[in-house]
Length: 339
Image 1 (cartoon, one colour):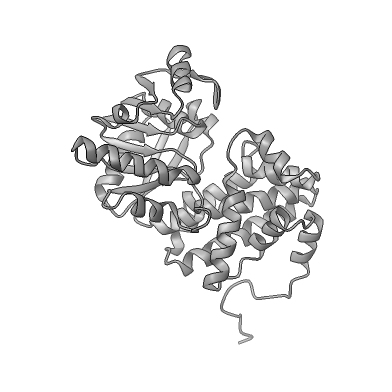
Image 2: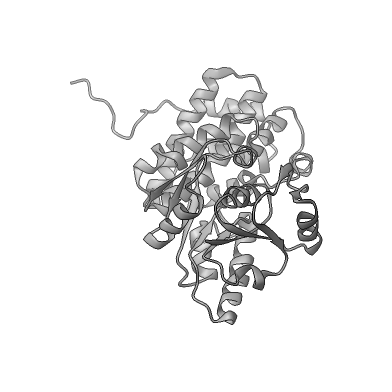
């Protein structure tokens, strides 16, 4: 296969490096200087320093050249970058008069301003493309190091799932299939918000009991929001659901968790984001999810609390106190009966 990866951040680079063990890969970045540095040094020093770009990986800033002859197109942008890159790719493929190869997107979140899921953004920006999501518990540094990882490809098209398996199911990586694009996308978006909440809790020293409660009730929020959008309940028990939730909320490599830890120390959001050097999708996603949930009438108390800290100036301790002061409820929708 010839695989084209669009977006040379940490995750796109790590996935390109993994794929290059079996396939020819072109890694596209919008910055010509960045592409030249990767070709010269065989390293993405900007986003994945210390990792050699071994194998047949060609870095380029020429989008038309990257598209040409590709058997699989992988969009490794942030959510904010997805729409413009998808539009550019659609135009390039159309101009070349070539059939559209299967398309995968990697980003996790909702588009700011529209609250659209990535699949909905793709449908608008690139109508008719055969596409799907690749998601699951995965830190770029570990994938780049060749450590084991299991991911889920979600698509309504068998050809897309097959292409993803052919591209990435080898070595230390396993790829599972799912037809539930909505569920996989919802899980990937909301787990970042829960990671900020868990980072706040851990940063305040609230203990392992509190962390377990946040993970559990966070999963309930994810499932509740997903159900309202038509997701399958079993998706949230899988890799893209509880798997990614646990990793992002507890792993030290999680950027969203680090946002929460820093908020608990009293750092400002602007300073935190400036120091990260990478995108923390949970910040923008929190606003979009909160607005969307309010419109469709789904209660998301943890998301609301995180939003209050991020955007309304509420202190982390006050947000935790407000969550603890909520009225008691049944754990599940159906109340237990005495008989």
